[in-house]
Image (cartoon, rainbow, N blue to C red; front, top):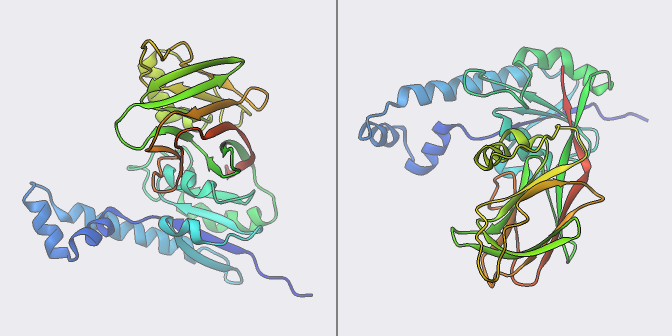
Length: 298
């Protein structure tokens, strides 16, 4: 029986130029808009063209007998990934986090199209490494890092996955009100919400929280543990601040019960439009996910 050739799924996101086109419709209108603000279109347009030249080269590096397709970040929630797909994320580090939640074990190659723009924590590979690596990835002959992911599960069974962190709070700048329970302790709180982060997220939003709270929580990217941080907890006659941060795992999960009449939300990795509602009485449990990001190292 004939088998299908491997499929490389190239994931990208809109460039700044494309986002401006979506808002202003034409290049001339973009140029006028930027000029009135003392900015120049040339650099933005040059980065746009350079990115697409890199994306073209990466797709051309896919073996001729393979299948390939390109998926935009905004279409990820509608795209059907196959179990044997190989994911090639071309862009900034956050793009790997964006795609990770839709996968179930497929290997991910993070490709950095411009090291002068992107740190390369998750997009470690130069574009010219894609061609030599793809056959080895298909054969399972590459080193993978199995990065821990966060899972948030509502009491009705709805789930949300995140590679960096899950945020629980109010959708606006209003205070989030909830009961928090972890490690046998329970407390009513009012705060700016809380995040539960993985070791990958410990280099992002969680890092800034650790620095502002002057309370580091050591966490490795592949460690089967998570860290939680309560943002700006407010003490009052009915709310406390004794539970502010800590480390959890599947033996010690964290549970949150909403005390918000409206506006409560749960979202992952900064994607606010892909959220779960979290209104009064709903309970969320956050723990280590059974899924992992399988990141190709070299």
